[in-house]
Image (cartoon, rainbow, N blue to C red):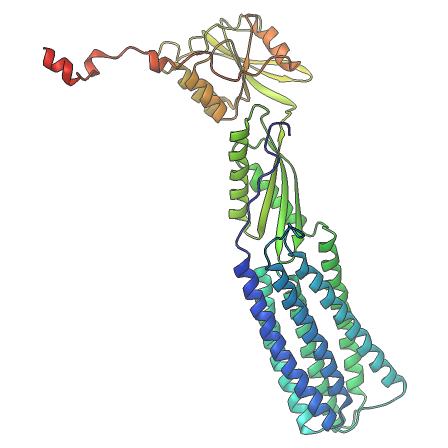
Length: 447
């Protein structure tokens, strides 16, 4: 990257987003603990092993939700000397813990259900209280799941989404207790065990799925190639960006962080490169707000071929490079690449007769109509020069030679870039039209 800026960062407002996630996790924890107490109490007093087991399962849910809240709380802390990048990954780590708890609970339920079926042990008779608590648990779990999923998707919180999946599984386990108890009253005591075994397999699948995503996030895996492609497209559309070499995104807790390697003209100075990097960041975060921070690295652009304009004394590559940019007889266009020089059309300079700002008119035509990448010239005024540089067009200084010789040097990369204009603009030195001149007060009094 040489003299170009090493990186430019921009971040968003994370505390408010994390605070909402913490509120949801805290409220869900309180509601789940209440269900644990109700299930455990009724299940123990009424001798319902299924409801008691469901209470243990809900306790695992409460622990998982608390882990999510703790992760969001840690992620909200500002960076420190020991943790200069913050604790965003704490939420991802909490999500991994959630997944492990879900997996363990699912395996235990499956083993217990399987052993009951093998031993032909049907559940005992159920009471009305067991049916009521199981139904109430299903309704509350549904509400918690919908709330966690809605907020988790908006915040991009992995642990909240994992908890939403577990809450949905809790709905099924509560319904399984309800259906199993009802089947017991109907004389089909083993139905509950069959349903519980199927639900436990679903819980195992949810634990494996969410655990895989959390583990991939901790390992900085590419989780969203489509979003990376969209980010690359937005960055490439920014004026001044010649090519987007690479876009990498990684997840840290509820946020996405990105690194962009973009190529710009090698003549771009530090100040303009810094401005361009900020423009890329602004455009990406405006179109893709889920990206919390983007680091932009600038690299020199090495095009395979360039469209070049040369002021010439006449048509053809053997004509001399004109000593005047704006007053040249014509402009010779060519395509320069490693394979050689491909001559293009030669266009008469229709602006050479202008009294002032002829160079600006030439440059505007070159930028708007010709899509020029580089200009080779012996001299150029400051207005034309800076307009070309603002349009990210390279300007190279040519010696007194033919157009072909100048283009050969450009192809061999021995033609130096012009760092500044060769003379002031013609507009500054242009004579004042007497008909438009306004007299000063001193001149008026002397008459």
